[in-house]
Image 1 (cartoon, one colour):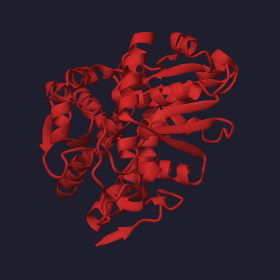
Image 2 (cartoon, one colour):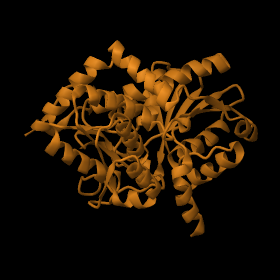
Image 3 (tube, one colour):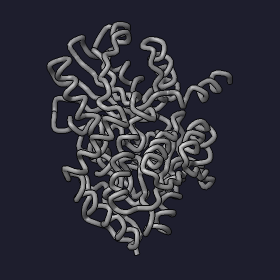
Image 4 (cartoon, helix red, strand yellow):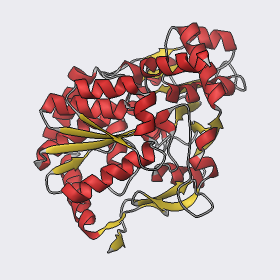
Length: 386
């Protein structure tokens, strides 16, 4: 039996479309999240690990050289790349592992595309001594082999998923299958703002630290809110975290940047995928369409339900960038600022450069640098040799 739950909805998007047994598990998770998210003791522990383990607050860095080169709007980089493990994923991993601990889970599973969420989950599990299994598409294990080794070094078991395209969607399928079979002992630490309720709300809650910090930092540095906040979008966790505390600020533009080769929100239609409703790329048979991006973390045919809602109600803008443009931005930021961005983040950088040229020197852009590019250097090196 599959049933729809009338909560966790963002307009028509979100919800929970899962088998009855799994729905019972998700209801328990939602209840635990609601119980602990505002609990002073939980909050104190979460903030402790963000500071002492993740390394927050991270800087809001003025990209002076890039700004001068463009000669227009000021560009600031929210430095999630400086977090422990090198990306924003650790924020959510710490929040969820603390929840898993309170729920008595004896095993954690996760999915990963680029490997950053897998590394963050393996890191958190090592810290709290909980066995960890990571599902990763076989294709992604090959192009992100370094992250596979990092996960294994941290003690995780990495399971290559050969089904389908061997990409992120297939890893999510495998992780959900595992959860259905092992829900009594297993906590699914989902990495993006996707999936059935309560995952999109939960991930947003833990990632909203990004915009909580950047809002205070930009007011201190510029004395005003930014003209625009820009972030790359795959499933949507870094973007919803970067947007969260600006959604009610109507004068701040929110811009999500996705790969032209996997333009789920720009070209998608409402459909159910992985137990929730969102804008989804469908093939001629009405199934999730094959996708491809040079950035493994953006290679997903759907999008978080809140992003689907923000797109349809017009609060946020969503644009596409080609892999070639992202690759140029990868090199540009490296050479101009001495900061090597993740290929995912490079999509946001590429659009920010285009946007800045259209604005004035009085304008301010915050771009969320969601991760560092160490994991991508070998991939780009191999691409450059072709």
